[in-house]
Image (cartoon, rainbow over the protein chains, first blue to last red):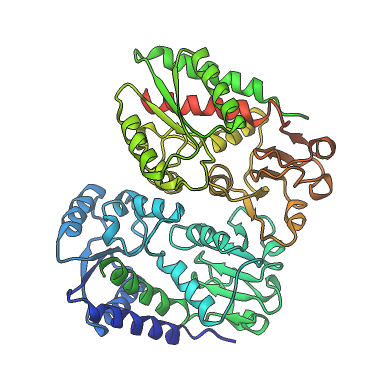
Amino acid sequence: MIIDGKKIAQNILRQVQDKFSKTEKQLKIVAVLVGGNPELKKFVELKKKAAEGIGIDFRVYEFPENITNNKLREELNKIVKVKTTHGVIIELPLPSHLNTQYLLNTIPEEKDVDVLSQKSQGAFFADRSKILPPSVEAVKQIFEEYKINPKGKTAAVFGYGLLVGKLMGHWLVNQGATVSIITEFTKEPEKFSKEADIIVSGVGEKKLITDGMIKERALVIDFGKDVDFETVSKRAGLITPPVGGVGPIVVAAVLKNLVELWS
Amino acid sequence: MIIDGKKIAQNILRQVQDKFSKTEKQLKIVAVLVGGNPELKKFVELKKKAAEGIGIDFRVYEFPENITNNKLREELNKIVKVKTTHGVIIELPLPSHLNTQYLLNTIPEEKDVDVLSQKSQGAFFADRSKILPPSVEAVKQIFEEYKINPKGKTAAVFGYGLLVGKLMGHWLVNQGATVSIITEFTKEPEKFSKEADIIVSGVGEKKLITDGMIKERALVIDFGKDVDFETVSKRAGLITPPVGGVGPIVVAAVLKNLVELWS
């Protein structure tokens, strides 16, 4: 079965709008976009559309590709301090000359809808965060929608990046899954993935995961467009499609986090 | 081969003393001990002996088993603020009525030699901590002593506790190992452990790991006294003994962290 990300996203947005409409606040979220990456731009547009669709202001600050670390830090320090801004997103990946974590650390915890500053990560890994990172929230929502209980199941997480793998591994273990983390250094990824009831991937490498690598009827959640959908979907029990999969759910989760933090 | 923890600890302490003697500071470390757990008391005594052996002051504050969360928090807030105290250790586990993370969060990052406050964990998981958690430092020291490169190897981590498993998993992945986290919910632990080049255990359950569960010539590092040493040691390539294994290395790592933070 193919996971209907749009439907799940709409459900989240409906709940968010309900909760939001009960507060008297006007919420505003700001996205910081560095350089001209067209995929990132498109993703920001989707966030903007979803936010505005439920009455949340959304503003994009764009900076040139060659901005320095210090200059961007300076600009961020101004942006995050604005009282009428309730959430700040730094679109990742940043150009490679910039120090991502250092820049993410400018975002105060109460505006960190992506849960990516050092302080927010500390809260998350100490299991004391008020909100979940959007990718984790997306998986949680998929589990709820399709009544999947990860306890006692085996999970293979492909990649250990800031946005998906690192956070997902921690959360899945906390849910009672036995988690294996597969990285570029793993010699036989299929040894782990073939045994896994759940596969979560966040690498960013096309056709990294093929049908020979997965267990019959596995749940496959693809954040990195890593899965060879055409073949894997025939073998998987449940799978996110490349379009209308996790994308819309992540967008909705960001807005959910904003409203959770401010209501 | 049996890992000589005492020898590794002595090497660390020698380096710590060298570095420490070059500063003009008198360093003091404080251990907070709640209740009368004799094993914890013994462990604190070992830390005290090691600290004093290299000229570092060591003071123990003892509190009764039934102290309330608020009262202990109040006492801790006083202890951590003393300017002549450079490191604070809260001996774990605390009695179960206390909120461990909330209490650990009283320790400021520059005195958090165990890397356990929410803030310190944030730094560690964001790969920006100046020091490693003592259990992780101990494994690093074992790798260095026995020239083990974890990159491309498989590792099974037993347990996902605050002191060992959670931190170890992250660090081992960062070193290029393929890590599987095994918890109480794992249905077939041996499936993972039998494939593992490296086993790190921090559960606290006697004879949890038996010789049938490990790969021939594996490296076995036991923080929880979980390993059936008599049988497993015959199969393992390298193994920590129940006494003189990781214990002394962890103690030395705590003092190393103190000196790293203050020199």
